[in-house]
Amino acid sequence: MELNYICLTNIFWMAQVDGHTVKWYTEHKFKELFNFSCTCSAYKTDHGYCKHIKKVCDQRCGWIGLIDDQKAETINGKLVCPRCKEQVLPVGYGD
Ligand SMILES: [Zn+2]
Ligand SMILES: [Zn+2]
Image (cartoon, rainbow, N blue to C red; front, side):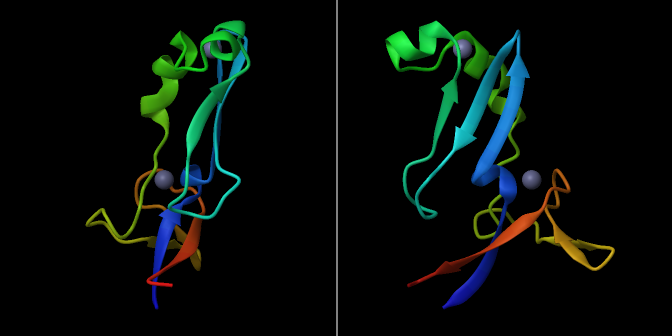
C-alpha cells in the first residue's frame, strides 16, 4: 500500500459568505462523496449550489498529492500542503 498525502481542505473546509456559512465536508472515507453545503434557504430548497457556494468554491485548495505533481512540503518539521500550507493527512491507496 502506497502512502500519499492530501490537503486537509479535502476533508473539511469552511468559509463565511455574506452572513452564511459554506462548508465542504465528508463523513466518509476518502474517495467517497464529497460535497458543499450552505446555511442559506436557497441551498436547502434547491439542494444545489447556491450563489454563496459558487462564490467561494474556487478558494478551497483541495490539493491531492497523488494527482498533483507537487509534493508535500516540510515546514518546521511538519508536513504541510505545498499550495495553502495547511495540514496534510496521509491517505492509503490500493487497499
Ligand atoms: Zn447559500
Ligand atoms: Zn492545501
